Structure formats: structure tokens, C-alpha cells
Length: 408
Ligand SMILES: NC(=O)c1ccc[n+]([C@@H]2O[C@H](COP(=O)([O-])OP(=O)(O)OC[C@H]3O[C@@H](n4cnc5c(N)ncnc54)[C@H](O)[C@@H]3O)[C@@H](O)[C@H]2O)c1
Image: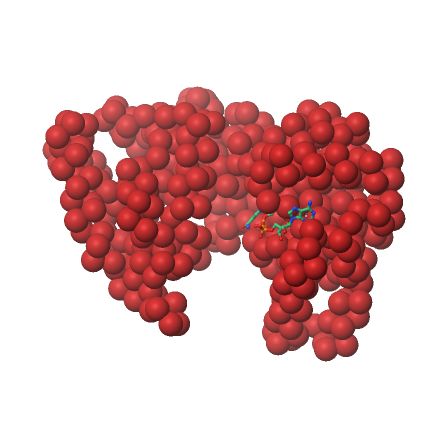
């Protein structure tokens, strides 16, 4: 299917950057908002992103100006019949998505594909708000969408093969790695990221490593930024909402580390409150040192866990010394669970994580490097010490039993 006219619903954080990605590929965009002031704000961000590309030498002034003319701001759906493909990037609330998809179904051409950029809602449920569930699909961009190199394409139960194919092709035409991911909570990349982010918090609250040690180990091992610095960047409140959601969906192995709700309760949200794992300069927002307020907070968690007898210092002492690999063990284990559920093709897994998170290597490459057998032993030891989140994935065991040393 040939796509020339796209419509984007919502000109917020994602809508503005998705629009820049689309015009960068020469596509015309109808950009819809609910109020003129929101449109103006979105377009100001579009201009800022385009100017950023010019500054980096990725575009000339005249190319940026030409791309800008491809955008037509609108405040209603009356011109949506012109769109071949719609990307909805409105707030993450089911009632808002319902209203929008009911409208889209009425206004759009019967052949038009309706994609949602939702991070956590069910594609099948959103599709059910229309009479064209075969043409509704998840198209999950990463923030900022004009820079990040991954798009997850998520079919709902009724989504047709053609819809998936067209959406994958559109993602690729934007210069992105476009990967099919089956519907599951948090999809592929954020599901695996969630396990790793939680592990960094457990490592801290169990006293196994300090803030600096954790962030340095993750960076040395594979990451462009440490998990605690990243938590501060995105906000502990957002992190807690995501962690609670994953726990509800997946259960015990995604149990929320105690430090996270405590930080939210104490307004230690990260850069936006100038205090999180680190402190931040009030004016420049530049990161300073480790936040001293963490010391009493971590001591209170330890006192609580000692009192309930959940974990003693003795239990911690029998664990292997902290190293970067251990931060990634739960992510590696989750990668095997994901493969077991056939959420994606195994060969897409590492590239998706690398494109989505900027990792230097993905969890399957890490597993091969540590050794599948050693990964299993590490997981088994932690699981035997009573830590449910290390219960080894059955598929990892099968690879080890089969004598395999790598996945792909
Ligand atoms: N922010 C992220 O990092 C991120 C990453 C991936 C996916 N997502 C998902 O993308 C979607 C948008 O997130 P966001 O962070 O851009 O939100 P946002 O709040 O920044 O922007 C949403 C915009 O939609 C507008 N809007 C609301 N109702 C509308 C309607 N009926 N028609 C047109 N516009 C409408 C709002 O005015 C607002 O400007 C959510 O589903 C979110 O889960 C967000």
C-alpha cells in the first residue's frame, strides 16, 4: 500500500517528534490537536527539532523549510478522509483512545490504517472501538521519535497481515528498525528494560553496590547511561507507574523494589525535583553528586527487611560479588521468556534492544558471552536463595540441556 498522506493525532511529546520523523521521509502530515494553543506548542517543538537537525548538519535550512511545509495543522477530523495512515499519539487513557478511534473510524477512508502509539494499553481493545479491527495496529515509537531508531509494530488479535506489512514498511521508510512484536504488557523493549531497572534498585537497596558503582557497571557493560541516572531523567513517579503496571501484569518476578515508592513519597523524583539518586543544580539542572537523602531512606528499608526477616546480611554475603553482568541477569532471563512466548523473532531481539535503548550489545549476546550454562547457574543460585525474580526461564534450561552455547 502506497502512503503519501499521514495524520497524527496529538502534538504532544510524541506527536511532535513523530511528525518530524514523517516529514523527514517526505510524507505529508495532518497534525491534529484539540486546541490552538496545544497546536502552537507542538509546532514550536517541531520547529525546534528541525532547527536541531540543521544545527547538526543533517539538513540544510532550505530542506528543513521544505519539510515544514509538509505539515498542516488541524483542529478537527474533517480532512481525515485524505489520510492513508493515522498515528494516534494522544494521552495514555483508554477513554481518550476510545473517543478518538470511534471518530477515526467515522472520518477516515475505509482503507486507511489506524495506528496507536500506546505504551501499555491493549491494541486488541483499542481495535475493538472501531469496525475495522483488521486495520488497527500498534506502532510504538521511542522518545524522541525523530531520533530513536526503533519502531515496534504490534498486531492486535484481528490485525491483518497486510496492515502489519504496511506498518513495518512505513517504519522502515522512516529509517528505523521496524520490528514485529506480539501483544504483551509493555511490549518487547520496555518489558526487558523493566526487569533491568528493577534489578538496579534491588542491588542498591540490598546494599550490594552504591549508586555510582551501579551506574558505572551498567555503562561499562553495555549501556549509554546508568539505570539510576536514567531513572532520575525520566522521573521516579513515571517509573513507579510503569513498575506497578508490570507487576500487575506479570506478577512476582516484577515485584516493585521498596525504594521506588519511598522516593516518590519523599518527592525524590529525579531531575525535575532536583533530587533523586543524584542531586541537580537548581538552575542548570546539571547532575551533581549522589543524593545524601538516600542514606537514611536505604537504612529504613534495611531495618524493615531485617525486622520482617525477609533478607539478612548473611543471605547477601553468600551472593557472588557485584558485577555488571548481575544487573542484566533478570533482563537475560526475561529475553528467554519472551522467546518462549514467541513475542518476536529471536534474531530481532538484540537489534531491537540496541536500537531502542542504545545498548552496545543485547541480552542474547550477553548470555552467550557469560555462557548459557553459567547464566543458568547464576540464576539457579539466586533463585535457591529465595529470590523469585531469578526463577530460570524454562527455555534457557532447554538451551543448556541441549548443549547450546548461543541462541542464534
Ligand atoms: N512520552 C513518551 O516517552 C512515550 C513513548 C512512547 C509512547 N508514548 C505514548 O504516546 C502517547 C502520547 O504520549 P505523549 O507523551 O506524547 O503525551 P502528551 O501528553 O505529551 O501529548 C498528548 C497530546 O494529545 C493531545 N490530545 C488529547 N486528546 C486529543 C484529541 N482528541 N485529538 C487530538 N489531540 C489530542 C493533548 O492535547 C496533548 O497535546 C501515549 O499513548 C503514550 O503512552 C509515550
